[in-house]
Length: 288
Ligand SMILES: [Zn+2]
Image 1: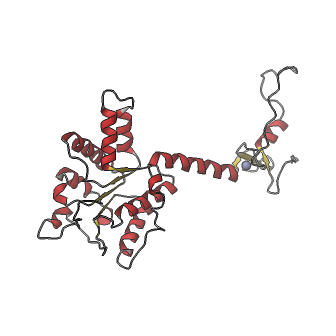
Image 2 (image 1 turned 120 degrees about the horizontal axis):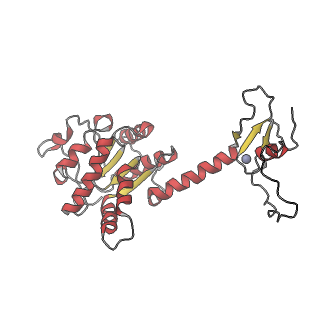
Image 3 (image 1 turned 30 degrees about the vertical axis):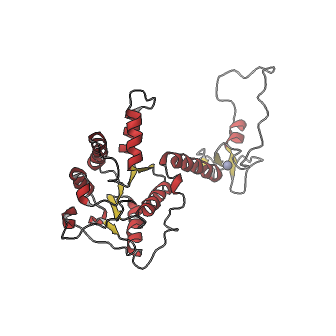
């Protein structure tokens, strides 16, 4: 068994040390002695792998682990952290930094809603529709679910609907340098999309059509989607309503009513909330 002087107590040695100890396998000519030498490398941040990211188990030929580099845990953690940072930058979640499951103030009445949203984050199967008036916590819970997705390594996009339509409109303008198609494609196909505040957008035919295209695409592809709204159902495009309610998580729309949060199973779609019947909570001022 070869013993490397930098080998650690788990029998792992930096891959660079191992490679240097091997006889030259390549037929490439060695650098001439007077070739300019590379600058001295900075002190490695990881003493185990010397920043190579891989370690070679020091085992005998015939051992299944022989010559199979294993990732260095430090390096893997570094990579995960930078991957998370990249996901965060794409997500538009920075503005909702404090809105996590931990910071949501649950009352006895809201605990069920909180638990439903948390169950949703176990698999992100289906659509989560959260309805409630201003300040009821629906945006907070939608953001909490998005953070959970991000922590699971999912690519997430959190979009406030009026802002989304502004983005698309700006990108669509003939003078725009932004590639409209790329932006639109990214929104409609992102692994988890949060559409916050649906129904408050200015409902030009163009905007309505773009929004419908996004929702319809995600419905067809069965991509997990979270929608929040404070609007009465009648104010939302019926085509959207039919898509929004077709893939509901646990067959229910989640109603959050401030100050009393409640939740009702709606297995027959939104018809159950027609005036005179059950209807989703509305805020007096149309905000939230
Ligand atoms: Zn390392």
